Length: 198
Image 1 (cartoon, one colour):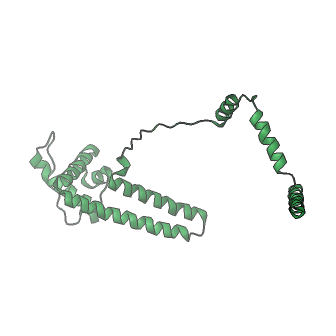
Image 2 (cartoon, helix red, strand yellow):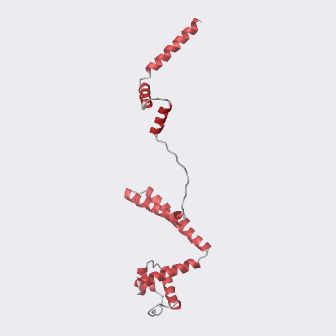
Image 3 (cartoon, rainbow, N blue to C red):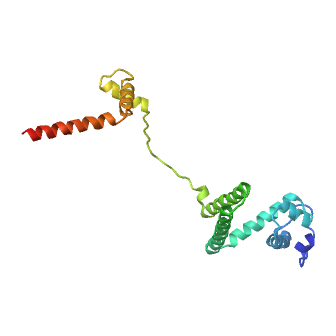
């Protein structure tokens, strides 16, 4: 693997002991930049390829990243951000479709986890992960017991009176409706009888 990553690269002369000058480090940074573009992502990988210390590899990688960020224009950064957003959106879309046809619950859960991670990535690319929402609202809550107690106090009712009224009303309303219909029918007949007598 290291032969593939180092193919076509000639390593600069070894650095002298002590603190090297920027001119001495520059050719090494060029090599590091090429290796990072070929897929080297960690200082450990770079250390193994170039036989340098971990801190040196880490510092060189950070220097290359800093140089990359300084040389990018705002348009280029936004273009890259948009490309990454589109890729994350496509990953989320495919994972969602896979979740809808998944055969097992673990497969569905794995796909939905990918959707969530892709959406987190999209939020990060848009800067929404660092967005701080400040809400200034006054919320008033009244518990039901307090409202009932205040109504009972306002009307001079004994504590628990509304509860007993509600219970009695529920019992009366739950009785069969036959008596009500008969009473209405009797009233209608009486009204018709009175109207017919006049």
